[in-house]
Length: 161
Image (cartoon, rainbow, N blue to C red; front, side, top):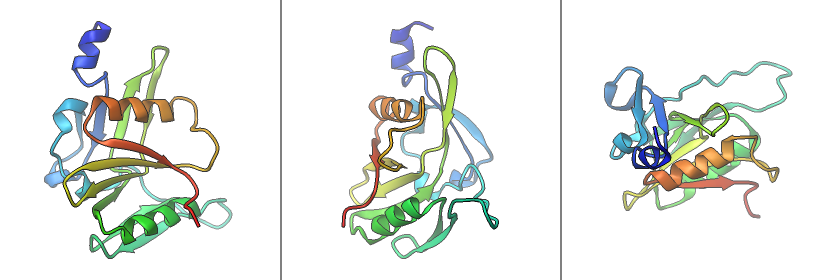
């Protein structure tokens, strides 16, 4: 597929997901994902925890959505709480899809931390990271996916004080 054809087809991105609208797992090109209720998606991977893992996973009861939303670290939990208190946020889903793409050298995949639906219908895909740069291939793919789709993609670090 030529680069121009790939861009017309959503930048070569596909999304793998399950749980939106009662569907089993699906793999769909990015342009065909517009209008799906991502805020109702189930996480594409489980949140695991045990003593000594070195991170802090859990579930937050989001008052803005009336459902539990998962997180994998203190930083994600902090961002999730801020999203829950934002009056413009009406939907939040944790790790709602796997984003697949080819970066020119190899196949990549990444599960963004959150999908956020705003009251005016707009969407945001949120990756929560420390101030460190994103891991190889992840940040650039999420950013390019946002440019190819309708959602704004954010890399959010430590919440402001």
